[in-house]
Image 1 (cartoon, one colour):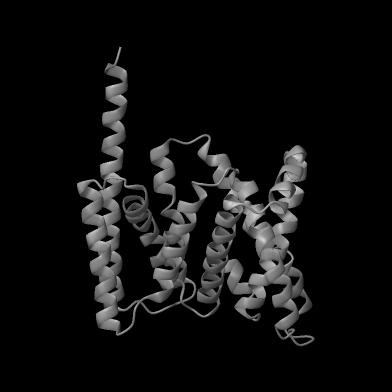
Image 2: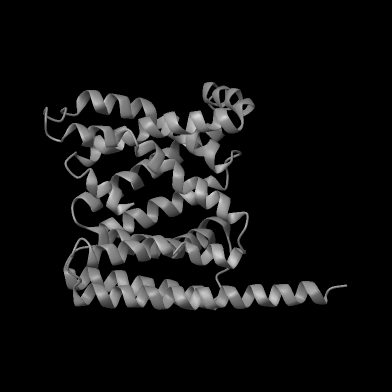
Length: 280
């Protein structure tokens, strides 16, 4: 995805976000009509009757919209390393939110991982003299978004359609208020590429949803590290972003924590499986 958004770097990030929301609504609505046309009236009725559930989805929409905005800005302003750090930290944010909001217990491995991530953020803040705000915003917004998604009655596809539909008025107003790109710059090809932002939003969702059905839970858990790993490598090898010593130490601390939790999760699944087989 960073390669895709970098192609659109000639546009302001806010303009790209507005286009992404609009074309995401179009793509999601068409996809829903093709797959489950009977569900569209249900969603429209849900949008017409405000309730607590709709309020939660409006908040979820603001969170995912903020996440998209910060990620697009980071990629188009050469901060892909910070973006990758945010998505490495995100699973640990989910763990903390689960403890604070849902009362879930943290295993010893999770406690160690959260401590290491906290040390990494503190180290970078002290040595670099500023908080890694891009990383913290991406991790915080997506973690909070994931938490809210647990409380919504729709599938991921339907939920995203509701959320982007609620953002649609803001996106349309944004396009009216934002200065229009000058004629000839960016090129017509770049303007045409904006039309595919909806597909860029929907395709990863569909691929992940299809993969989850055929993979073990442990494998799915490890897959979540592929995206930030790819972002990290792209930042170094393709975009040639500098990796400071302090940043490298921070990454190593977080990777260590993630490795500890991953091994612990695999062991726990093995214990659960043996326990299930032993139960008559």
